[in-house]
Image 1 (tube, rainbow, N blue to C red):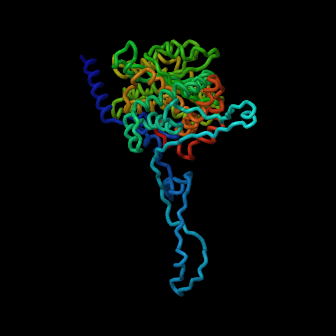
Image 2 (cartoon, rainbow, N blue to C red; image 1 turned 30 degrees about the vertical axis):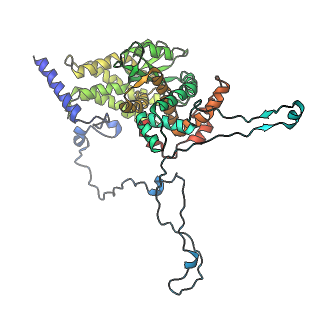
Image 3 (cartoon, rainbow, N blue to C red; image 1 turned 120 degrees about the vertical axis):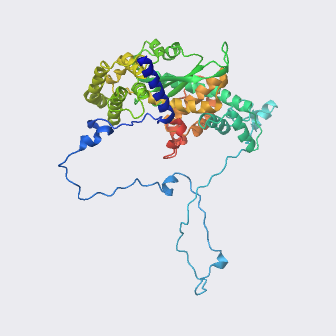
Length: 509
């Protein structure tokens, strides 16, 4: 009965915490001495010193300067408006002389102008020629025509900019197609959401998927790969009811110099471990696979598995009651995890070799002490604390892998950040109608996320790809696309984010 009371009490405390507590995983407690701070609950005792001298002067606190209008708009093109005195009115208001000379211009104000999107039709013509000598010799007209770029959508009205706009609105701004349909109507264009969907599926399956495949070849060469998955729903999945859950799997490169950042989404109908096994199965050389504790990843046998400390920390954080006391076991476990993250923050600018040395010196003692402490914890069976302890014990081997290589991150936060735009967009469009639509979405998210990870404006990059890839791939479906990669010089020059603008794309992390 007492165990049941304790479990119900914990459940009530957890429900209150979920309802009224903070949802962020950011540290609520300041940690160990090695970080220059003590836990908040004993901060006064830690720093109290009767012999400490009183300060003779308190240095004035300076707030971080707010960004000026000039800084906010410094990367935007400038259109100057000159206000001058009409020539027949250039008369001195004192002596009435008309002998005035210009001494310079004065900045009166600076304003931000917005030009709403506009739709117009571009008609492409080509000039044809005939060869007079051939005409005279054969008696027939010999016509020479210039090569015309291949249309982004065959026999469609879509241009590179309009196709990029639809994809950008759906996958970056999370605007579902029925709302885009209304938006196009405001432009004066009557276009159905079915047509917009056709544009997305056509451009993804004809042009972008080739780039996705090229990215996969490079991603599989990465010494560190992060993986995660999230729920999606496909209404017309063969053999499944519309209410069934499918999965969007996500893979990305780790914190390594080569290859450059790559993010790949892959739609699959189930959560079976066979999917990451098939996706990663072509890798021959040993590599690190960083994931959460899902057992399905154990099907991948050609990798050295690394565990996620963020998930371990989250388990203990979930087990903490609100205003947890100093000796609360869940809080102690949480602080051990937090110490490792604080150390990683100090090591983040080091080279991998130096980071590994620091981990062995600083992080390994924390890791060892944490698992020694876990052996002394006897949690209530079935409690949140028991689940946290069980998770940490079961994942011990994987959670120690970060001590083998400085390139390994201690959490899957990187790949989770790439999943977040998908989960945000999912709240708006809820589901995919067909398997083709889900696959097209996976390809689109891959290209967009990889572009953003490499500092590109996703709309400009999509437009850039839709301008070039149709012609290139129509000539040769196996063409080398490396010159169109987002880290290439041409793409970096033409599609780069404006300075300081990348942070504005919050949906893409």
